[in-house]
Length: 452
Image (cartoon, rainbow, N blue to C red; front, top):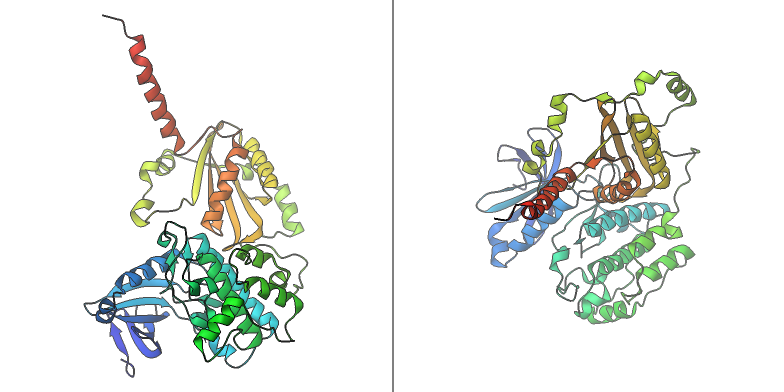
């Protein structure tokens, strides 16, 4: 397999070997269906079963399906035979970030770019209850556009892995990158342990060598425990301050990822030549386009009409997403209103201003709302579309068009009270209200019956 191409299940053509570990080998491959380049991790079933790692493999699959992010290696599918398990994953053409650092320190702007992508992706993992626990340059890959991709979730843990004390207790990771509390074996917070490892990575990117290193492992652990390290003279004061906060040996006072993202060194970047940069997914109109839009007649701004078949298809009973998604996160919400379209639009605009959303009206009752601050998966963008059922009765559909689903759901919760004046009923609540009414009627019924 190492030297010749090999056809896997009539789906992939395996080529050269990209890497090798104790229990697995990784190959470059090409899809015979789409011609897409992929990487395939081939795991020996017998070897992992002998050492009791099957549960770890299952956990890795679950984690990789849970953390879909632009800066995390994507798991396309998992195949298996009697003797092998195959992970079909995204191919990172640029190889390991370690190979770049091995040639020497990186320029500060280059290191910052990789570090920003690492922190954003890791923050996303933590929001999903996933702790990587083995962050190091060897597990950070680069794609063809030089964007960072976190890989190898083999040692990761899920939130449910915590014990009753709310901490993780499995000692794992790479010695030079592991946090002091993990070495002490008294339980640790997965989030704070990952922050420490990111601090070591940042030091390595800027310095070209490790902050804690010794030929004697116990001496290296002692240095880690006391955070004994020195910053080279080429480190900027801002970088030094950030590193000291990340490599704090006390996890209780160690900086959080949110504060890392808010630090002056992290936020600094190449200045844009443009006067204003629009969020991803935001459409920018020229003055002439705005004038043309203003001159359009009122008819073009009217909401779309819904016929009987449209209304039936929007019913909860015809929602088939449950057949295709496990524990799906709601990406859309609907409510009905007895207010005219102009009142609904006015209220949504007022709500957008209150929630710091940039609201833009489009044709046929469509409003686009963009969050001005970047989130975990770029800028959150929400569409609100108004449909006319009758001239005095409308259905409004609110759905995410860009950004993180959990951030969208939180924003939706903030929207609900702000829209209550125009909402007749939210979809899904009508059935609950009906059931409560029936229950109330049944409770009242015996009191109204004549006594025999």
